[in-house]
Image 1: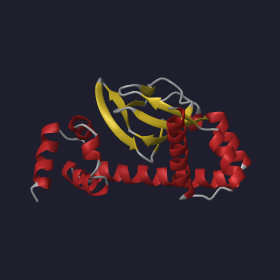
Image 2 (image 1 turned 135 degrees about the horizontal axis):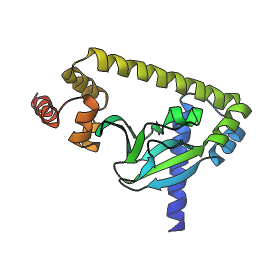
Image 3 (image 1 turned 180 degrees about the horizontal axis):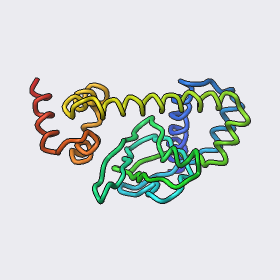
Length: 202
């Protein structure tokens, strides 16, 4: 039993290393220090990692499972993003500024994550150029993603957004309920169901 746990922990940290290494190469000593700052946590289905009004204390890496970020607008639940295997997650603006967030993030399935707290992340940025480089490239990718998302929301129809999501992340349709995906795409569940049927029949 203990060896199984050890293998799982090693697998999650190995997963993190493979993702980080795509953006920046850390020396063995740097990686060992960086890795030691992360802890593995299992988030139960429907459990929240943060709610609106709280300050984000952690930055997350999703090893297995799926998280959903949403906001409440006049009582309406609006999905704003999903994080799954190999993604980073958390209320990132709140984490960087250490201010309260408007976001809610919860698990759509039992989800295994690694997390690092704010003080440790800042120490890593200060100590190692390689980690700072990873953070800089990651932040740039986040900004590019936000820009693309704004263009999609402002300039594309709901049907176009569906087509783009289906092309970029077809597996998400097996991971996330129609209700949450429809909210994310800005359409009714009925419209999403119709578009999925048309896509499957082609």
